[in-house]
Image 1 (tube, one colour):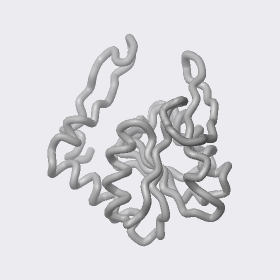
Image 2 (image 1 turned 90 degrees about the vertical axis):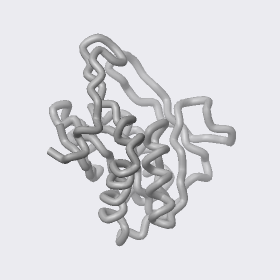
Image 3 (image 1 turned 90 degrees about the horizontal axis):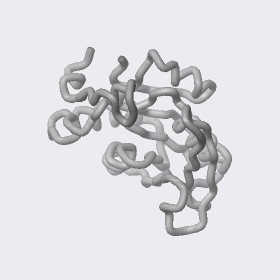
Length: 171
């Protein structure tokens, strides 16, 4: 296991009973570990000619924006329905307890833009898949999906197939 795992805190029964939430806020709070995550991701993608880093609300914003600056790429947010101010496109996706909707501005990406999708964690993969499909629906090239933490036992990587996935820490 990575030394970074010391900075990921388990929160039992959050957001609901039976779930053990992997909290990365201690990792972000520590300047050395946050810098290390950014360094790892930068090294992974510095040769990939990324046009835009797309971050998923909300921790994906933190990681994605920092990485976009280093890659000299633009940053694009994907948010829950009703949170973006301009015209949007949206994608509805299933959750274990219902459905949700994510949105991106209609002019965020265009055909052949090279996009890196970033979030803090992949569990079952439903949110990341919906975001990947939203980006792809605009004709952009999804270069990769990057996360800090992958919960392998939930098989989110399989849900993302055929989209690629890079993760720093695996549980």
